[in-house]
Length: 244
Image (cartoon, rainbow, N blue to C red; front, side, top):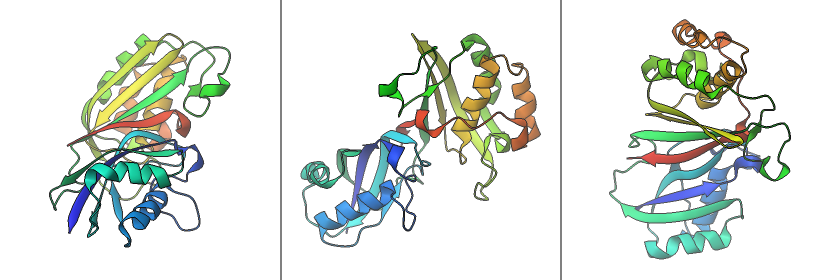
């Protein structure tokens, strides 16, 4: 039995998330369908992150086990011939049998893109959140510092998250202004459901002056989702990189 690792990218706009759900379109279902056609056997894939509906990926990592004999160097070509244009296989490698894309990941990097100008961009609307009023990036950076480290991130998790420990190690957060865009890059060992988007939503409220920057420490310590800001739209978020 071979264990194959594949790096994939996708435009998540038209999918109900990465994880398989019956009767709706998901990235996992598309990948398993295509790999089943290639290997001529049922395939179950494991992803490094279960991105929500509408969230994109540039560096999602999956693995699957197969008895199929297709050379690994031809796998991406075969997959891309069968996948819809919204999903692409970027690279593939044969890995040790115990490798697991989710459980062996050391960190995930999510990047959120905000278009910060008066007029929206129709061509970028699937991949960024349009915020009309100017953002105070310095205030956002200052308030974000308290999030770095190992904390209970309950305040920044979806209320319907699964009952895993809320403790996460946020390794770093970088906020950059790139002309009319603001990028928020968040790296952690793992993320609670909607955690990156709630952090972005809260930072945006601080950047707009809707709440003081000092509020972030209180929100974090409260461990109460009601204390944080709104959840930023899914379309601006991208799983950029997974480290092992």
